[in-house]
Amino acid sequence: MTTESTAHVAHHFDTAEQQQKAATFGMWVFLITEIMMFGGLFTAYIVYRWMYPDAFAEASHHLDTQLGALNTAVLLASSLTMALAVRASQLGEKKQLIRRLLLTIALGSVFLGVKAYEYAHKFEEGLVPGAFFRFDGPHAHHAELFFSLYFGMTGLHAVHMIIGVGILGTLTWMAARNRFSPAYYTPVEIGGLYWHFVDLVWIYLFPLLYLLGRHG
Amino acid sequence: MSDHVSSKGLLYSIFLALIALTALTVWAAYQDFGAFNTVVAMAIATFKAVLVVVFFMEMRFGQPLSWAAAITGILFFALLVGLTMSDILTRNLLGIPGS
Image (tube, rainbow over all chains, first blue to last red; front, side, top):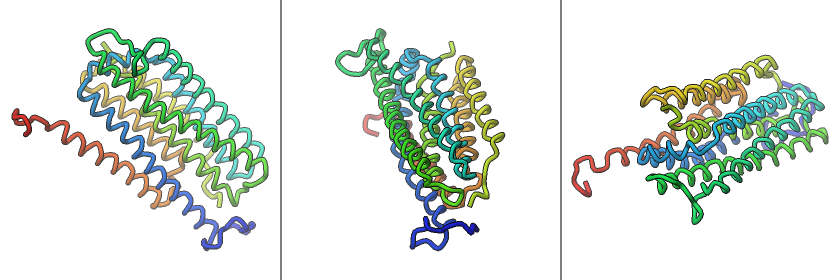
């Protein structure tokens, strides 16, 4: 155990280690609820894709695979910078921590920018479900279902990204005010778990939405 | 407290592996594996997910309670999909309306 200051340990914990373990466990419990929230949408996707496989494959061709792949790479890079930020906080490297948190924010913003560009394009093409939905072919009605799920799933994901950027901003501010040390970096670690979870969701969204029925 | 620190080299290697797997999944999407295209895509995605959980989320140093939470999440999602699909897949099994 550390001999450093234990001022950050709340009175209901025996040790700093116990407090950190409780915080990490609490975050994982929260992530279960996140799995279930996205899980409902994934289940809806599985059911409707099972019922209308041709419409889903056809509708998926209207998504830009290159932009999807680019955004996947951007998000994976942001997970790398986040993991490096956690490492910096563990080692007490304040400058590196702030630089890597800002880099993660920048990469997250690039992802959201590309997403906004894609959404705008979908509005122009008339692929947004509702009164102005335009889709040629016999599967138009069920293609609309695919786009409802596309906007629902990527939209919920984007909301998580926006919240994530807010969390990272708060962490940067706390780091600048010397709130972290090798003895106490739990907020950075917990924020990292959240950011990586958002990355995990996209790892599944990318093939399920963008890469459907590309062969043949 | 900081007895579990991942080396920079390891983190960069995991990132490169994730990028390579992304390229692989795009390539695989354009190949015709018949009914197995989705299986291949989900297998690659799950392998990527495991890399992220074990190395980036540092579950390799994780306490048993965190593992229990993560596995509980997966289990309940499997229940949700499993029970839903057991209904969808067995509808009209007997060819009699309402059975």
